[in-house]
Amino acid sequence: MQEIKIVPNPNPQTKPNDSELGFGRYFTDHMFVMDYTEGIGWHDPSIIPYGPIPMEPTMMVFHYAQETFEGMKAYRHDNGEIMLFRPYMNAKRHNNSNTRLCIPTIPEDDYVYYVKEFVKYEQEWVPHLAETSLYIRPFVFATECGMGVHPAKTYKFMIVLSPSGSYYAEGVNPVKIMVEHEMVRAVVGGTGFTKCGGNYAGSILAQKKAEESGYSQVLWLDGVHRKYVEEVGAMNIMFKIDGEIITAPCEGSVLPGITRDSILHILRDWGYKATERLLSIDEIMEAARAGKLEEVFGTGTAAVISPVGELKYKDEVAVINNFQTGPLTQKLYDYLTGIQWGRVEDKYGWMYPVK
Ligand SMILES: *Cc1c(COP(=O)(O)O)cnc(C)c1O
Image (cartoon, rainbow, N blue to C red; front, side, top):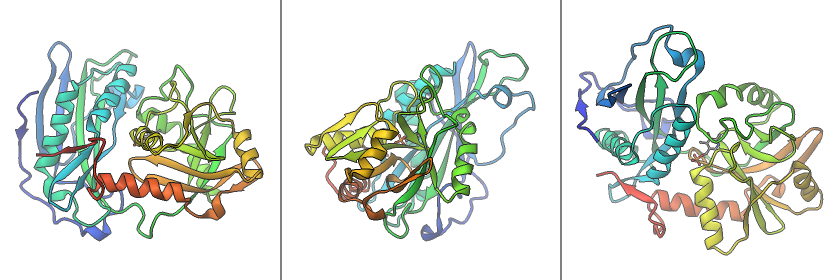
């Protein structure tokens, strides 16, 4: 890793109140930037004042969407320590995304070091109030200018930080999900397993359609048969049917969530049968009719665990656990957020100190 050049912001903002943060609305006074040039590699890591970046109309990211990103959080513990959650998983996944999109990778140790040093520099911005955190958004994009599809020769790696409020201001609340049976998000062989902006661009229409019908997110089915459940918007999804917890396997079209991995780990440790397998929407609706669809929840960094209270597939609606957060869903939420905020012993060694 290289030494980080620092240019302090001469006009720091007044920080927002911890109780009014919301999600992704405020950004800290600085941003991290590092450039890549073919033949030189990654160079000039810097922390500079947050602000506009130079760009040209012919920059390749605008035309061919060579762009990837990550999402993670820093948590302030009661003893004042600031902690990251499994940051090497993000570094590795970002590199997997980069490799698929022909973007140069960043050594994992360097990646985690830059994230950590930047968070340390902006540590005053990690909110103090319970259930709040500093959301970390690293991203990479092609900066070479010109037409013609080929891997770019220059890139920027950047990190921005956003103090974020409690996701559940009024306690953990179930959401309504609509199963999308026409549009698809990803196919095996495509980019479904990567975090790239392109995946999201193609998903916005279905998301808008669901919202117009009063549903908060879309549940995607597999791209070939439109039969097997894959994931939700920006979350993986798990179904508890007759005591067993089932989630889609990560075999190319599903994003391998770090929350998903952590929850599977905890469930197995607790003695639950947690299975990664193809699960058809028909099997789920059938289980709901038979009263065996006990709990459904999404997993992702932003909400950690998001209980699902209602699933709509074509003309059929399944209400789950009387639209109440299920006992296992609540227990998982309390345990995993307990580890993240330092209220529960970190027996897996998942927390990584920023110091
Ligand atoms: C980021 C993301 C997830 C969740 O991953 P986490 O590492 O748990 O935050 C799930 N699905 C998609 C499409 C995502 O982009």
